[in-house]
Length: 123
Image (cartoon, rainbow, N blue to C red; front, side, top):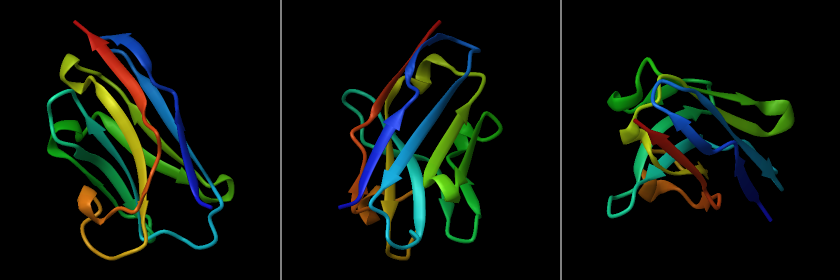
């Protein structure tokens, strides 16, 4: 059974950095996309950054230039380096994987989700 486990969340001040990790276990084939999503209270889940099976990356406009997604295929681990954090980045961050085609940042296409890790940024 595939499991995705996030770690690395926490509380930081604005301008600070965090690095999220997502360890995948039970993976028997390569995903079409692995991505990071976030959801703030009362808000819809939104795509933050994704990486497809060719290594191409995509980012939400709100995080371009500040966040970097990467993966270590040997370790089956996905990362999200978050720099210059802002209070509006506060949310629960989820790692997800999908085995179907379509936009990497569309949450409706994902069939594997982690439990989430909280990121809180204070001003």
